[in-house]
Amino acid sequence: MAKVTGIGGVFFRARDPQVLAAWYERHLGIDDIAKSVWRQEAGSTVFAAFARDTDYFGRSEQQWMINFRVDDLDGMMAKLKAAGIEVETRAEWDSEVGRFCRIHDPEGNPVELWEPAKGAAGFAD
Image (cartoon, rainbow, N blue to C red; front, side):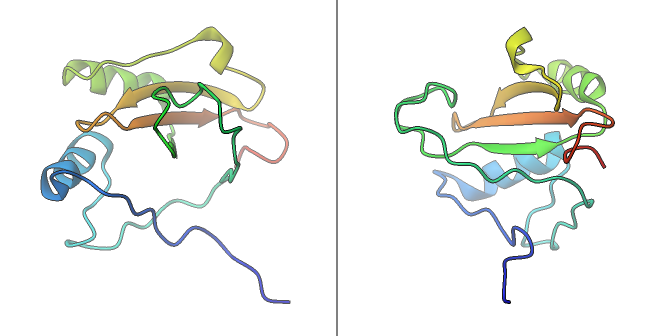
């Protein structure tokens, strides 16, 4: 039976696509598609719909939020803070599936960073 095998891309509108692409490359290491296709490391991916009235994303008009897997959340947070990027953490975001933090890109889009817990059923690699 035919099925989806993974996420092939994440596409969104931006006021200044070149500036935003450069920010993601500089701070998160995600190459701009104009330069090359970003090859992800294999790992868990969660695809989930949230309730229409959720406040988890932040702004009420926000329709999506991307979550990136990271291998060293503490190291990533230190790097982002050193670059002057505000990093938000909350104790309730950490769970048996891993640790989380949130940043916002230059256009105000929330970006969640996730370090999967080692050994968490279905999530750790």
